[in-house]
Length: 382
Image 1 (cartoon, rainbow, N blue to C red):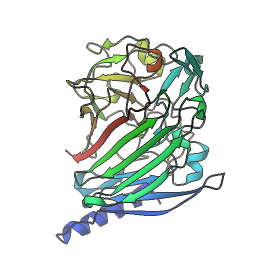
Image 2 (image 1 turned 90 degrees about the horizontal axis):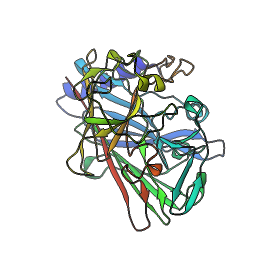
Image 3 (image 1 turned 30 degrees about the vertical axis):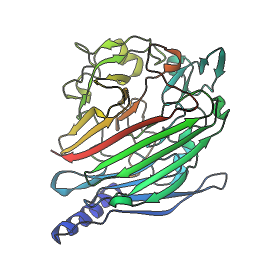
Image 4 (image 1 turned 30 degrees about the horizontal axis):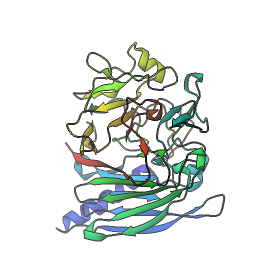
């Protein structure tokens, strides 16, 4: 189904509900989405709120496959990049919409130490020719089938996903028990709650890797999107996109998004950090008065569709990625190729390579402790 037909279909449902003076029912439904090469059955779940917003999520990788949100003139469009089939996600996906972990983002040289013991992880990324471990390794959380439980308690559709990452998986220590819960509220919020426990000290950094285009998936680049990041500092990187350990002030640099700026406004400035990443692919240090408190991390406004997205999180950082490595080789749900900067990510997280930077917020989860975090993507129309 083309992106235009999807938009017209959901807009028709939205208008019918409002013309009748009623509202849609909050629901969650399940349908088959195929099987993995190992024969595991995979489902896709559709969460709908009373205002017509929908999220389609599969238990393969916890992937947000579609996110249909309102725009100008009650026009609903899918605003996340992705594929129509499970086979495409398995074959060739740059983490579209997925849960990433056990450690989201990069770990330098795939190595870290806990106490006197050193751990060696898979090297699956070499930016600038420098090796690192990325998003949990060869088979991270984005490539496994999660146990799913759907519910509609308190008129809020929820999808609870559970996965046990066994001791030694991808060479990480400890059995890590993970639950990720997606909820869709009537405030047009997609809420993601993360919970993890372990029986052995291990690094944990969980995030969602959705690529957004608020004009609608497949509708060109994101350079005119206006981004605000609630951060006075960011973590500059070396040529391998690994943080140097510095927390650098954004003031006077192309990384100052304390007030809204278009993505494309300064992305081609002569700046070493932009040149290393080919654009934005950095961690911003979020401003907060209380560690672990829910705060606004970012906002994004797209003028032509009128869509406004707010991101709230309890995490200390957010990775802003401007789709620099998309190159037109991948075709998405609408059949359009995903060219460079046709989507952006705002991944709420702890800082990259934290296990090797004791000055960063700690990411080592100890037995008897819980990793908890919450991120909310809230949509409205301006």
